[in-house]
Image 1 (cartoon, rainbow, N blue to C red):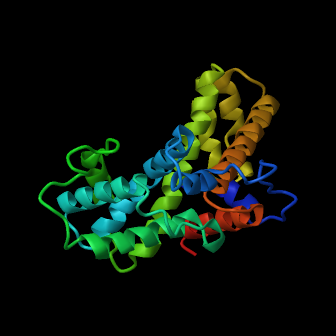
Image 2: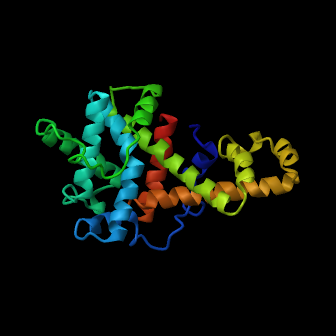
Image 3: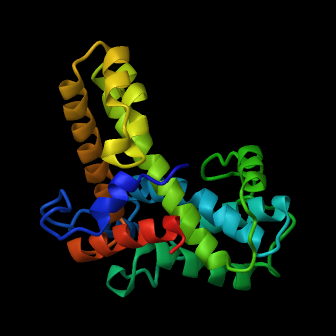
Length: 258
């Protein structure tokens, strides 16, 4: 996935130009994850399951980079999520001590240490996966990536960043689809990469049957909504607007290889 440099440019700008689009952080999924440790509410578990779905591939790839084969990596990742969703790994969760990204990687490392020698022949959560993991897709995806085992933690952060951008792009596409503007999204999504002056506005306008000025307005709205959704996703895994801005800057730092 190409790094959206138009968004990177915004990540380093003053706070007045990049704002988290939420008045408070009290109802973030991070907070709901904490509540999942104390109750089995549908809302809490749904929030935790969504975070698991976002993080499962970066964690699977991390386990693979730690030297485990594909089958063991699938089993370990699935069992990790079983324990996470059953609240056994949430006791030390504390958003004031770090981001969810850091917490879940630390929890996985503890799990690998504690569980690798203990695993029984019956795996994958006693034969009942908590949700479906596309193992074939994961391994194919892993093979296509640079399997650099020299720094699994940095590789995890990079994969986390790419997964987060994919999630945001999918949400953005869904919004355009609901409004009956999928063709517009497909035509304009290329403008999320590269600088503004490099965009083929004239060609886009001709293809869409729109004026060039209207295309530029549409691109501006697309990028603005992309930034809003990205900040929303990040805000769900940190505890304050300041941390959200820091996490956004770090995301693009990781993707740029800095």
